[in-house]
Length: 93
Image (tube, rainbow, N blue to C red):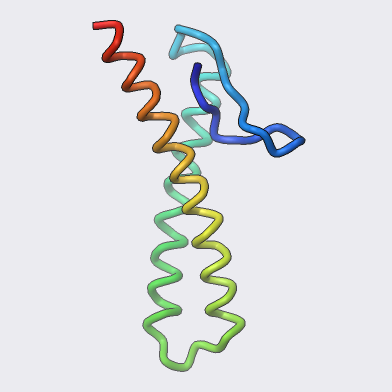
């Protein structure tokens, strides 16, 4: 079971049950994960810039932190998904 990079409407995790890494949903999940990781890189750069600016106000810091928390959640979901896939691959060999 692959943990997908999004949740259901109820906020619960979504899983994909397939052995085909080229299925439509597998490719969509790969694309979403790639977009989330790219976004996290941009958020990290922005947060570093805000934290490095001694004139940054509370509003800017709170915005940067909010985005960083969102991105961290996405990146952790990708990491968990990929580690589970690795566990499945290792158990098959």
